[in-house]
Image: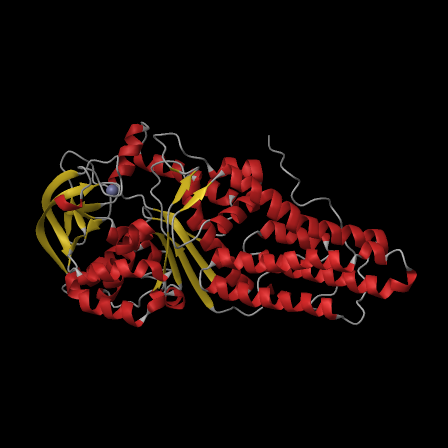
Length: 515
Ligand SMILES: [Zn+2]
């Protein structure tokens, strides 16, 4: 197979100062759905995720755990990877900011900005929130607390820092956002960024002084070991490190600029304003899209370890399986606003959508083929109006699902796929194969009905593969077909497979009984 078109996707990197919770997973599952979709298209996908380890609060978390920072980071890496593996996240460019190759990339990016005259030294004073890694003015604090972290009391910091001259990029950033509406996806997040630009962009600090009483932790500022780089030159550069910047120009030039970089709404200004300016300063192209999502609440409340309102992705997967969790989150969360994770809604989606709609469709198809045709899918006769209608719905579902995934409307794409699943169930009610089976005169009609229902189910499996990779292959297996591989999105075309013998294995999603 020839190598497909490059597609580069990234998520934000996480602070490994505690275990990942379900709130982290929306972003990762979304990126995974899009990465898997592009692999199905035959694209050559690089999918970057990682850990943001060069932060003072990792040092604090390690100290609280009584551990060496590096040993603590290694342990946390295992914890994060366990969660992402459990959710079947297909990351293939995992990057940690403590890796030597990352220091190389950050140093290079910083030096390019210096050479371009965009970095200067000045004294900074402000309210510093360690969770945001950001300074706030008096007016921005809410009751003396960080506007984004109501439990954090920012510290007044005054120190000599290196600054990046963001203000120089005001006009060019404004023009970029105007000329490239898709740069901020979905567009609901764009006005806030335009308003920030209109209000005047402030230069931002890119270093911290190494304190004599604390061990240096981070990447030294080139030519000034009394300072370490601070968050943006260190964290954002991960997206370049992952694809070989600066020492592997072939790999880097193949995948950069990124196609989609997905982030939470709390770091929009850093990715939509700071990051493009840093890239321009270094003479690098800008990513095509920054995709922004809202936050997840848990049972209507803010997710918080201190209040105990948290749940581990690994525990959820142990209880329900990865695909139901992926499906529920993709179905009920949206990019345009915050969303809520609720156990009750998860179980409802599991029983209704997965058990009744999808699971029963497959179960009826394979068991009737077993019962009436000895397990072999017979060729269909001439299609009638109902068959043509099911085929039309299947074609529309495939086309819409592709377009919606391309536009990051991942919940709507599931709606489009469910239109096919519902239509196929309705079709069985209309054709009543259990009645056709009673009359030998209806043999061809029965063959046509069973084939049409099997074909609709097969296409649904292809379309669902980015969302529920294991389930899609379990459906293919029960239909007696090969597993879905890279480049197989074409198989969503009507009539593109040859059936053989089905392989019934019982319900895909056994019902969960609730009190
Ligand atoms: Zn904060």
